[in-house]
Length: 468
Image (cartoon, rainbow, N blue to C red):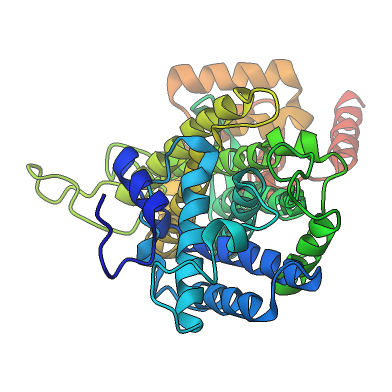
């Protein structure tokens, strides 16, 4: 097997490249994963140096090599193994070991491929196994990547809240089961979108700490074989210093070696966000439907021609693409759940497909949320006259008359209005003072609660006067 002269990887990586041409997506496509691996290997070298297991020049060389990978993507192209692989991630771990060993050799003045002073297994991988280094790096990668996802979600929420303020005086019809319900404001509708996502943002921020528990130092199955007795504590402490994260070791290393529960939880959170965002996109598509034969309550920005055959047709392409991102996240959450469930005994060999899908989903969500915000939400405008027209013609407004007329009379008004096409206010005025009916049906008054005791008192007083 021939390894290119300029390659920083070694034979283990070359074999993996030959064996696993599966997804076409390489580790190099996820820079957070590479930086996370470099942090893990740096911390391990630091810990081994502090424990007297590695000489100072080797520690310094490994640290310098890891810093290069952390601070720059100049060497990231050499992480050429497929994200989907057998061996529970061994190929990715060995790829990192080989690249770091070769960069360390360069720092020591040795040629690439000469492992006499820094060996991928004996030095870079000292006191570790793939089974603790790989998931620890993956957890860090998710922690690093989640920052961009949460920022994208925060920005989208802020954009929706801005629209809520802009549309706060636009009265429209609310709908249940796609039928007229009662009036609301367009601002209330957009504020509800923001509030829904804000709850998920809080949930995501509160639960990221589940990824701070690392089985680093547990080695093969959690018994810590081939590791110094103090290595687990020392390596996690060094990693916390580097990343400034409150990382911790598990109470039970053997349980932690086969558990992927933190990945599963974070995937569940992404799925929850995806479900809500997709629902919002569905609503945007409905509210903008038309322009003449649909709701046409809002206008979405014209991002692209909607048809290759129908002139002037503009389709809601941005919500559509965000829907598809959400479908992907929701579907692959099932893949992650299946892979988590399929763990056997002391190891989950399916971590590669879990990590691939989770990191990919985070990339999709970050880009999708930013695209939805900048190319759709920020440019939405309202059609106030259309909204008012639908409210004025709706029978659903009869609900506002319940405190004045009671359910039976209000039902009669609704039925007659539906059958005759006459306005609700005109029919209701036969049963109550037209001025009171007009006040109860004032659109702005129907979007907020009122003191029913005042309405009931006025009604009782009127009835008493009529009886007298």
